[in-house]
Image 1: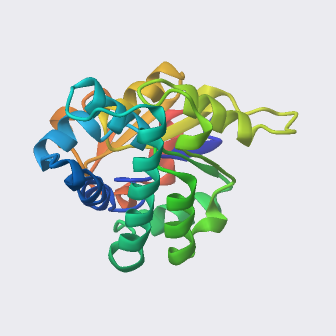
Image 2: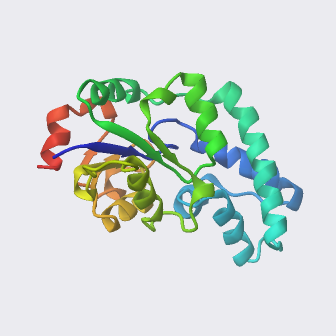
Image 3: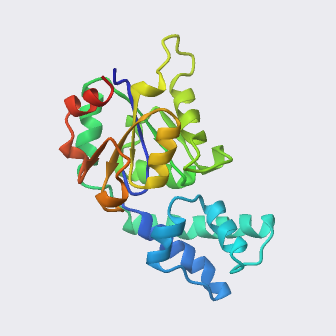
Amino acid sequence: MLRAVIFDFDGVITDSEILHLRAFNRVLSQYDIEITTEDYYKDYLGLTDVECFEALTDEGRLKLDTEGIANLVKQKNKIFEEMVKSDSRIIDGVIDMLEMLKRNGIRMAICSGALLREIELILEQAQLYHFFEAIVSAEQIKRGKPDPEGLVLTLGKLNHDERDAILADECIVIEDSHWGLEAAEAGGMHTIAVTNTYGADQLGTAEKIVRRLDELTIRDLQQLCS
């Protein structure tokens, strides 16, 4: 039985991945480093901000300790927030799906590698905050996707003070990357992939793949959990 849908954020609800890349490169320019678009989508997109800077450090492109990385995350977050105010947008089809789920009494949450302030800022601007009962962001977890830690925490938040707890296989996770799909599978949840960021050939582990979220009907979702 379908009882909850957990959304990734960047690349599923909002088209902000390119803003993240621009913000990373603005910060990295002080070290004469640039992440190419190809490398970002291949190697870094599934990482939290901290993990991205840690990866660059491990690769020898940066030489920073934990405090230095934390400082870069703050700089990147500030730049990203400035960009969001003028350049962010909600992906076509998202609002229709949220409204469909609400009409059918399906609970909704977000599990994202983005920072909470970034998520809240975009949701508030788009007036979508009220759809989501729980938000799990990068600050709340130790291990990002493909580790299922964030999704397990999200389900725990949905089940807070609930006697009739939602089970993992009563949840659908909507993702745009293989990292997120792997996390959902590891967490025992059903999966839908949307081809906003990667092609269907890179999302083949998903139970269902769509081009836009408004292609989905409530029956499609219910059948995944039947």
